[in-house]
Image 1 (cartoon, rainbow, N blue to C red):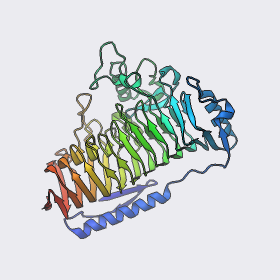
Image 2 (tube, rainbow, N blue to C red):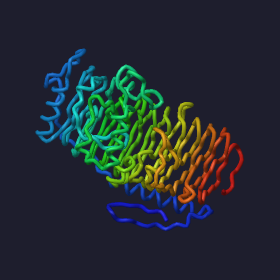
Image 3 (cartoon, one colour):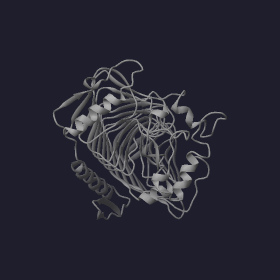
Image 4 (spheres, rainbow, N blue to C red):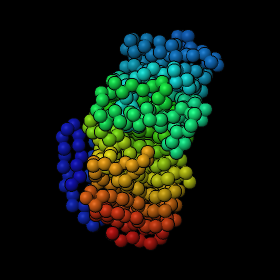
Length: 470
């Protein structure tokens, strides 16, 4: 059974997902019809035809001049007057964090650059999250909290100025502290946040920030509705780069992400509904796109799946994975559609990846991928893993569910070690995985499968050999 959920109504489309071409076609056709419905339901931003140039509020593209107050004043004035565009003109403007307001489009003209402070003391404490756990921590570099109809657009650049000399060094080496260096891995920092979240301490009392070394997200829309990020280039991020959080109706169009720092995921929709990611390029130090829904007990507390997510015409270069779901996935994910994407780099580990474990749990279902071209991946084309582990032992009592993963019309030139690498639980096998019209060349092994139920292979060729149903 495949479940499509919308507005708390469950529409049940019952398929037997049997081993024949006709039912495969029915599953695919009905799923992609659903994707068109989702697309028509995503609300788009609309702004008044009125502009507010930050130069008129005292901003100057002068080295070391802090333009935070000028940009803030322009945004506040724009919003109070009913909205419009706040213009960042050509030039390099140094700034601290920028907080958006209702009906404001922060627009970077071609040649404009916002260079963000690397002094952690410039970032006030706000409600945010770190690696899937809500907390009070440093403001994201661009932040909106409970706002409607907002945007960041244009042909300019957002430069977080992160490097090994500032934000990035807080991660330590191999997730371990370096003696004498500030680190997120000290016991009172990241581990404490995870611990107090498991104790269900209120978010308002999970206060971190200065001297706790939990890096801020770059662009975060928190509990927002109807938002757009379009055209811009983002580089040198402290941490996760585009992070819609508990938000609806998010469009990310034509964005270029080029940032290779630690945990530099390109785009992480978390607890989000109706998300459209299109025409983007991701060249990252971590996952290109990673769909999330909270970590462990905090994700179960929020209990909000990410759903109805469309990814179209994107290019993935370096990264741990092209399109990834997890690992902060306790609230679950459903109805993800990926089409017409290219993925290619000797530094891209996997094309499609789902990662969870028995601390995370979560139900991950209804993932559809079609019409994609993959050049080179290191490890595998499709990885489904219920035993993902980092930061030590990640076993618990919340056994995850992964089901209804369907790839069709996929061409892979160099598939790495495995076409499919899948590891499920005996009591919760990975269910209903389909390959249709898939061609994979130069791969070391066809499949590595543990506790996988109902793998269906149709018209698929691996290393020049046609593969039969498993």
